Length: 185
Ligand code: HEM
Figure (cartoon, rainbow, N blue to C red):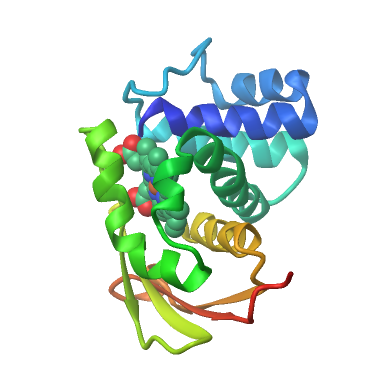
């Protein structure tokens, strides 16, 4: 994945837990990259190693790391670094999710070697939808949960996400049932 992803993990760790924890995580992960370059490609293995090591060093589950990372990605990385692109996604959670399938097509203009996930929205109502998530990468289900939670916060929209199907349990791909209420003031 592009270095941007590992850089975001670094930011999350250093801002919430400090530099020392980040150094300990890199050491445990066996990653000796001093500085991640956003637009350079790195093996996916590095990202998985960092997430696993973060779980051990910070004494939280991998699930908790991925959810925190998903929220951080939306509320910090994407919003601060790619604000215009995020804003063009829509003015409500529902609109953003409907436009989500196109988002990484735009991201690909900046990062041409991107191997993006694919999303499809189905069974849309005023307060719910099912979100279908297709990827060749294993283990990122909880990252998507965190991303959608982050989007709920971004749009001041309380959101509930339940996993309706899992690739790890034999489904073709992961499916999330998403319910939201009207934005809070
Ligand atoms: C403008 C904001 C965004 C940018 C710049 C961006 C960029 C990226 C990049 C660089 C990767 C790594 C893939 C690679 O390097 O091949 C990635 C992966 C991913 N992105 Fe985004 N992204 C953005 C917003 C979002 C949002 C809002 C979601 C919400 C669902 C999302 C979902 C994902 C997922 C789930 C992955 C993991 C890769 C996979 O599943 O195979 N992204 N994105």
